[in-house]
Length: 118
Image (cartoon, rainbow, N blue to C red):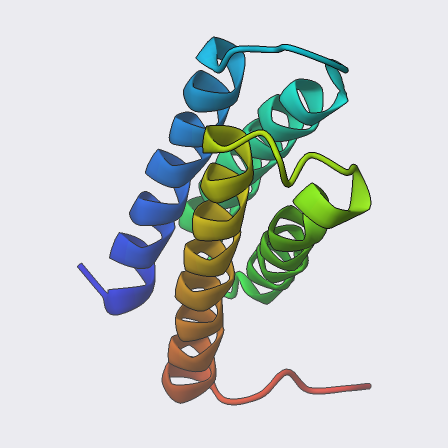
């Protein structure tokens, strides 16, 4: 199994974690953070599966990098920094997601070279 494939598997597991952890987290105020976490988790799972299924998965991995950054910034953007677990979950998961997907992009460049433009 190449490095990229196990990084994709970790990203899929992280997406499942996001869905479950945000769905089960207490919701004292607005449900927006919960839905953002669930939808981002589902998107990460779908993009991870797409990346597993393709030979040159640069697009899904770059999208997951963007989702990781957005997830990391979401406690500030949606004003839920005071919500303890949900905020720390978003910061940690976003950081890990962006990091492992950047490693996967690097691995794809080493394995196949940079994408060619027509």
